[in-house]
Length: 73
Image 1 (cartoon, one colour):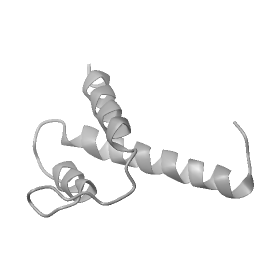
Image 2 (cartoon, one colour):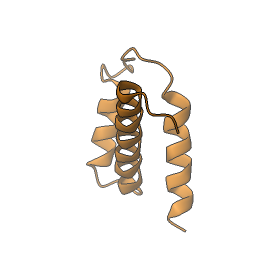
Image 3 (cartoon, rainbow, N blue to C red):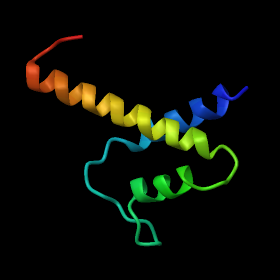
Image 4 (cartoon, one colour):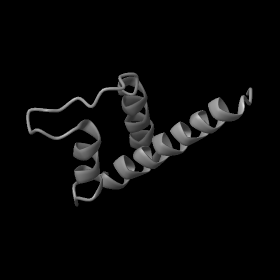
């Protein structure tokens, strides 16, 4: 049951991950800062946001590593 919300969060992060510039919300925070605040809060499913951020960071590291070494999948 816990995997369903995590899948939605991962899909949402993947859909938003295309832009390189730091977009700021009306609060003046970047999207990453806002996600970090949510991940460290006590709202329901806050763990899923943190897990999605870690998964996105891991994927980004792997992509950068593959780009720098010329590895192909």
